[in-house]
Image (tube, rainbow, N blue to C red):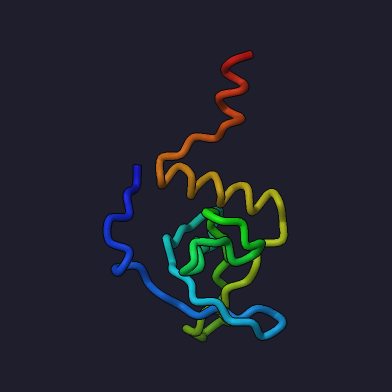
Length: 106
């Protein structure tokens, strides 16, 4: 299980949405899944950047233009892609999927 003892060590970034609203976020992890790079972020207030649900992390895909080191973080729109990254994040932090337990009980 991953334990975040010292939040001060997390990378802090300012994200801007399509409407120009800014949120100060903490980068919890960088993951590579299916050949793509992703970041898992949570805003400083502890809410998801995407839907403001307390205690959940947002997943963003890292994109770069060829030959450019500048990163652009974009929302993962595809449900299947999002699920794959969410599962990788859950494995990293040691959280098991509740559906797995439901299947075992049947």
